[in-house]
Image (spheres, helix red, strand yellow):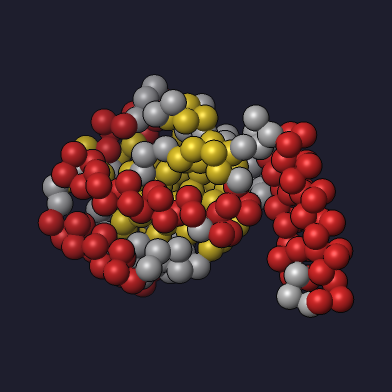
Length: 218
């Protein structure tokens, strides 16, 4: 599975706003944003979008503008964000996300963890592929982004509370394998451009990257 973990995605002042919003609530039943079989699998709460829509939109803008997100995901659109809350005995069973959310094609998913992992037990994000499983329980402020489509779940919380932001990105490059090629090529100019003797090579690589985006983009 092609995934990326990013540290310090949000600035401290925005994290403080999120903490305040969590303390204020209100929270709605998480089933309200699930469809089909996912509705029966989902047992959690979510921060009211009606009360905190402006904050959630601001968070989405910061995530979309993150340099590593832009290099890895080549975002075209970002869906609404959901701040999920899992209290004791809450979980999200194995499910797949919808192909479109808010008219945004869901090419890439992300989960931004908001709590110190030592403050709760359980609550791991588990992503299942055909050959193996990947498990994530990251420190507060770290985000994992990965191609949408794989079955995944959140294990039951057995102690404490787990809060996390989730959302979906429509990429300018629909195919995950092609996105991976571009993401790896982006490392070349990003690394070499600081050295004058490699500046021309970095420029030529940048030209190739942009031509591939034109060739494969939508």
